[in-house]
Length: 414
Length: 178
Image 1 (tube, rainbow over the protein chains, first blue to last red):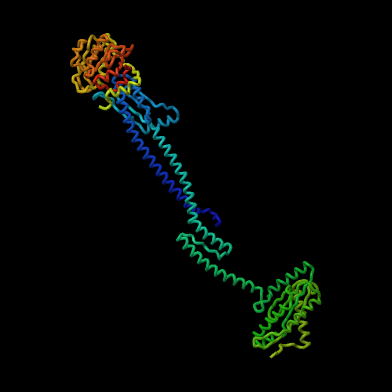
Image 2 (tube, helix red, strand yellow; image 1 turned 120 degrees about the vertical axis):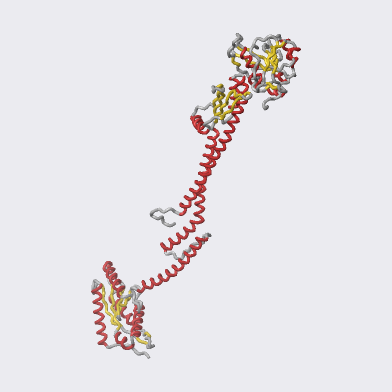
């Protein structure tokens, strides 16, 4: 998963879910409200007709009772009709408006009061019918409606609407999950790949196909971009590795350079001081290298340096280290496991290795000889500078001794 | 007119169920020292309103047979549909009943009453008995006297054989029947 942004931006899933929820809630509310309203209007219209019919029925039923002025019979006639639902009050008045008989639906509790209030709202006027004898009105019937039915309808409609809303919320969740699977998951894949590329340099990752045209196009372009990046990255990596390898090394011989030598020598001094052991530093110089250069050219000098480097590397143990300090000067740091004779043995081995001829660019074979100076820690010095100058001095002494003994040169070996 | 059933069929429906007790016609003012005179007049007129003859009769002839005690205010009415009501005092004999649409039986002995009601049976004459406490006159309606009110009883058998149609709603108002 991609890390959450600090300012908590809404996710696409949230946006879609919210949009769905609003849309569906709006639809449900609109549909239920219009259904409720039209339902109430239709029911009220039917109920109104029912009340008028009731009024006429009561008028017809009680007519003889009114003619015979029999109030009990009026009451009985009204009750037989008024027991029907949807009627709140029945009244029979004489033409002067005096009430002859009256029937009320009994209600006293809270629900009754709600119903009464609703009655007054929905039926402000009673349905009326005249009791006639011939053409004369001898009484008038008033029927007041009861809103109980409409209220029950409203209650049921509200419950249904709320249920629908509950289902809506559920449906929205499911829709959002689906959308996430179908739309957002592919986008998340892209994001994951981008994240992996950035964090882990996993340039080999690719966005899988999603099955959605727009996202697939995006994914393909993204993959192509990744392929290019991977190529670039591979180039950079190998170049970097080469640069890193080269930096502390001498370009010509591949040996450690002066910087690496200084570092290793300091490490050897520190290590030997800590463990109270000894180690030796050899300082080596190619004899008459300047003449070789002058006589046979720089390419021959380079060949000689490469050969010397190879033979030095071959002569020492793997725990020792050889460096080219610059020009024709080399140095060897001998690891601490020796006595003086051991050091002399190493020097002999180096000299012996130099006996092997090497081929110059012009095809001639040649050998090189080295002047060697030795300095031993801690007898000859306890820091790098001291050791180096001692070894340097010893090397010069060796060179002068060897010059006096008789110069050795490049052997022609045609 | 809707609601008017042939009482032959109404008989089967209503005779099995006891007729509802009806409260009473209030007596109202009584000018001639007869406490029931006004109530009797209103009751007779109301009964006539709910009777239907097979052919329209105008004016309606209301015959008062024999000497009646509560008949002083009968007659001289105008019905709700505009018909006039003519009162005619007749002798309590079968031969005197020609042209009567309504027969009001006065203070007569029960056999005399039965004779008269038998004579008009099936001829479309509305019969009302003033003095028939035992329901034995075989008149269609009999006035029933209570201390402060006047009501009536209905003889369904007599009604069904009368040749008249009576609005069944009147059954609800009648006090009881035979």
